[in-house]
Image (cartoon, rainbow, N blue to C red; front, side):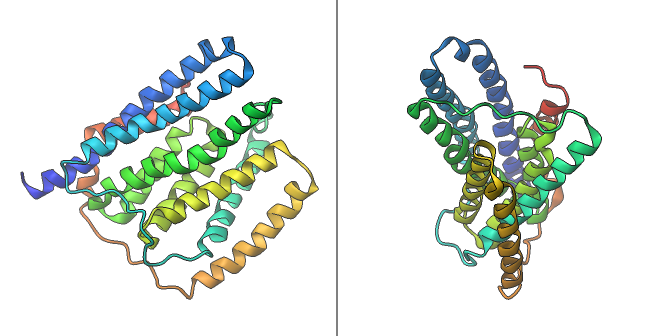
Length: 281
């Protein structure tokens, strides 16, 4: 098989996995709407966690299966070469800025404001399921799928293009216009950190910390979470960005942009972005 064709199959694998993700998201939304409402609260939370795992796990399995043939590789979970705890607050402060900008734009451009989150369950088992489903599962599974598989599948097109394409797919998978800017910022930050560190560990940790902050801020509003936490994060993030300037610079690997384009990838990108623009479920 010619080398270009082998490398292009990485884009096809990424697109195939994202098409499966789109179908899984449609099925997940339908099942939640039609079936979970008939179950008791705890059972519904548990079944929702299973559905979320399948929604992310099936596309991940498909993408890995398709990647077994091409030359593209999965992102390693080893220690990496440029790891630093300063990556965490530096990444979080950028995500915080994207969220604050989204809230500002939402208040200026619409009267509806930010969407109301689902209420926190009252039963302890349901709360545990909510924590796993809102914090732990997305941080691990989404990073394995979008950065671990998709980002590295697109690497032959060049690392910068791979970051942008995977970030756009990540943005589209968050099917709400209010989540687009934070999701795009997260995709760009986490993709850059993954290539810079040479490992998926730091992206998972940043994603996990971001989910914890978002969950606590949503369900336990107070002056501590509304004012002190963002201010403290801004200060710590500013220090982190200054400290990271002393670390080795990242030199993106060049590639052939044509190798990042395939029919499945373009179709998947259009369908995922259409989730927010034209919701059907």
